[in-house]
Length: 453
Ligand code: UDX
Image 1 (cartoon, rainbow, N blue to C red):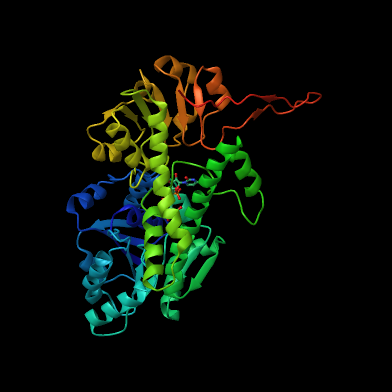
Image 2 (cartoon, rainbow, N blue to C red):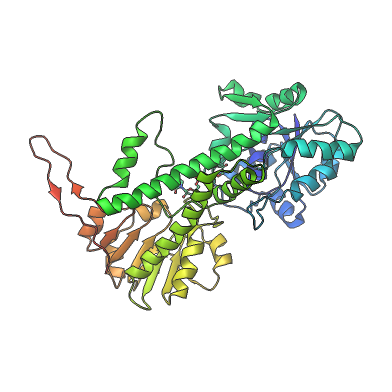
């Protein structure tokens, strides 16, 4: 099939490369001429594992093209995917102007009975509104507008596309559903389940899925706080509840609050849609507030752990591992608060480009150990693998102080204690129980996690 994708951002590029990998002829369009010129040379402007290789491969195979001339490409396309940005405004509502402008601009150039597919995350009811705009712009009703939300996680987007748990197609007529089924046929043949429903339901599925996943994170973070008061261990609690197959173990890792381009924005938009339609979502409203407060509370925890004008090393600024994205990352709340409190903050991230643009004046280091040199407190803020395997004895030697705050619970607290560090994780201040060896009794040790001075 001939497919056009409008938008060469994160979602547009991943979708384009993966649809080409499925065998389609894909043209990815963007108004940014420099970006398109770089992409034609297979230079990918974002960090996503495997994406530049896949784009290079598909360009070489002749199945993936880039252009700034969307209207020219549109004329022969069977389906046009809209993957343009939907930024939030101050009320938490999303700005649909890019989606609407792109739809109105492209509509007159589409061939009759082609389908316009909304991939961007949009509030429920948008596909039907866009359909009215498209009809008006063409002066006919021959173009269907469908919804096909994505569930890609940064860092594993290609895998999430190729091995999706399900494909959601929102279509208000049989013909457009058939076009989308054909687009995804190679994946459906591999047994990936299809959820085919109306556009409004597909749009709601995306928001409700993200809201529920974010709720799980908010819930486990609250449980972590309780564990700290009761000397419990949130890891053990999450493991125990996650083994109930009705609950499952995913998205139950305590952390510094969710960030990224989706959860914060989508929960705000979901709550705002509920308010606007007289169906408030109080759970989500509370979640949003608590998530922000958590980032601030953890900043205060660092401030309390450090001496006045002390030095703090922050390991990890990306909102999660395997991405350089810092959108709504905990680091962006925490670091300015530390600097405001008079602390000398030193940063490291294996992919620092995104963060460097937003925190250009911070002290950046090219190695984690360098960032920790002379630090009174070291904080692990992103769960990069290289931090899991930090040489803790070297870390202790590099630091001036002893406090290691692990806001991702990725460091073995016994190893930290043996290296002479005063370790504090999240929700894991409990007693360390040695696993029983045959013939030996279980022994309990005193907590190693003391409050850093
Ligand atoms: C998310 C959704 O997972 C994806 O389906 C959607 O398409 C886009 O939004 P992404 O933003 O890439 O993907 O990241 P995700 O892995 O979901 O993590 C989101 C945030 O939650 C991160 O800040 C992460 O650190 C945090 N998180 C995640 C936790 O704190 N604990 C967890 O158990 C899981």
